[in-house]
Image 1: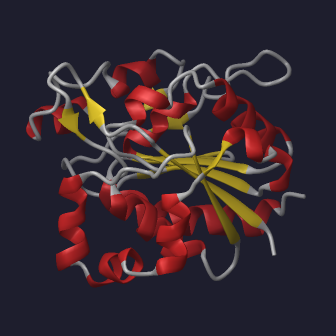
Image 2: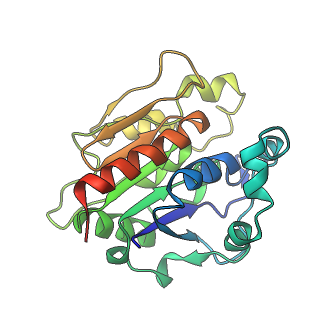
Amino acid sequence: MKKILIVATNEAKVGVRGRKTGLWLRELTDFYHEIKDDFNVDIISTAPSRIPIDPLSLIEGVVHKQTRQYYLEDGLMDKLKKPLTSEQVKGRDYAAIYFTGGHGTMVDFPNHPGLQQLTAAVYETGGVVAAVCHGASALQNIHLSDGQNLLAGHVVTGFSDLEEKMIGMYSDIPFSLEQALRDQGTLFQIAQLPFTACVIESGRLVTGQNPASASLVGKKVKELLKAVNPA
């Protein structure tokens, strides 16, 4: 069975005020639900310590049946307690790499050498690169073996400036994700209504705008992998 690599933040605070953050749980569980029957899954983080979960995202663990089901699943949660790191895996072993979100990703994902190398390796061996929400912060400044920027010329999405302002986080984030992605030479697109699902497929690159998009990202990655059949 082919393998998919899921990446989660290890950062529990963001901004000068130290706002609590971490993995946005449903961006993991919704994606996982879509691909778990067809692929083996490994989870890595930027440190081997327990992956923090954004406290606000745990609300869905109470009110959303599917999220609660996975939050109570020992097998999946054990992978969050003792995650692998980028040094312990090889990009060529994975058909896809998926970056989950949460504001913590804006601290430890951008320009992380290990994550950049893994992403380039997955892509250059015919695999799919995917991200949702703030997870797209990992895709900055990734260069392929020919020197080309991975994102250049692609259409992408991610958590928008408007959404940041609407949830009161704009003054806490270290940079504008929307602008950072535009600066990579991309065409940045978002849904007409904030917080509604938006998924963009651009070649073998799949990005989702916000938590509502995670399930659709999973479905699109599965469709793509059936089509491209990476080694």
